[in-house]
Image (cartoon, rainbow, N blue to C red):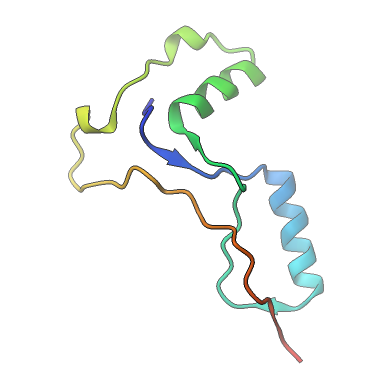
Length: 90
């Protein structure tokens, strides 16, 4: 897994809670939901292995530049969670 690619995963229960709140508020617009911290794909894979008691030795660290993709990929796909005004319909 990539050690140099980061993203901002969000636990599904947190996502469900946020979506329920947004529905109650009748919110609309473009919303970026993500964690306030980012993590590498490799570190995330290690955490998943720990949670599900998988053998972490099967997860091999590598850099994204050492992998061939058909299209170029960004190394930082984390989302900004900076709060902006929430749009509420009337």
